[in-house]
Figure 1 (tube, rainbow, N blue to C red):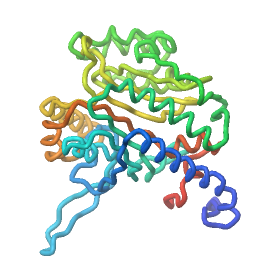
Figure 2 (cartoon, rainbow, N blue to C red; figure 1 turned 45 degrees about the horizontal axis):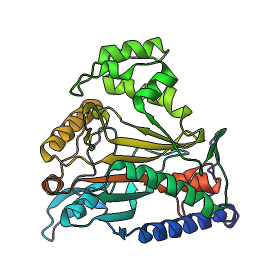
Figure 3 (tube, rainbow, N blue to C red; figure 1 turned 45 degrees about the vertical axis):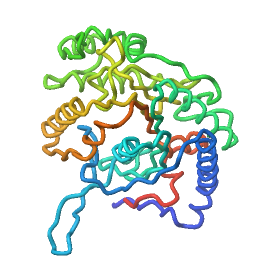
Figure 4 (tube, rainbow, N blue to C red; figure 1 turned 90 degrees about the vertical axis):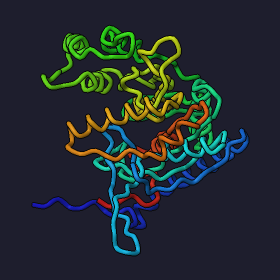
Length: 349
């Protein structure tokens, strides 16, 4: 017996159930726009079609074809983030910018994922990534205040969005939640030792396959042991990622084993990913090529590099930037259980 299809979102009774979440979404977006404007940020709008969708090994893009008047075609992609375009604007001379950008990621659908979603990105030229930590804390509180809630709840976890977020390094989180000495598997220049991390992970009860890379093992420890414990009681800022896991971030001054990258969590849900931005075009090219080599190894495909972006990076000023999953934050603030409940028109399928 075939299972019945779910009733479509546009049915009046379904829309009536979703409408309070959608109105909260609009209020939060308006409040955020006002917050950024008060701090001298300029709202920008970036093009969705790009020659490269981004160069992270495990992100999957939607591809299309651009046709010339003569009928010749070339590939274009819907971007997975407005990051490349925003950084080009920083190179052009903008100092504080933000973008409520529609982005697209293939192979992603679930309670916390949707193939089309809204990414709130903002950048501060000449400012440290610690400033972004303060931004994230302020935006969490503003979302909750605007939605009229005093706590976030998701899958049995509770988080106080008004409490100052806990700041913990990735190495501290590995030790606390998995009893794994992460830095023992990272050399002084950031090089990684797969066997050392694999042995520690196995001792922590994590399955490790023979062909797993260091990055595979790292990801499994994060997903199985660390993430479920983050943002419980209050938000967590998980910082100082290994440089090998921060392809677009600059190394931490004085310790190249780790990078200026942090992620924001509430109720075990990843909400934001932020960097002290890498501006070394040669190093960025090397990292992108390594990411695409890994993508080719795992998935049998690779995306082109955006040469225009790499050229702009060479003149981009020092900056910090953050990408926040706006739909996820609205979901928590409004009390929804799935991101598609806070999207005005979810993608069919």
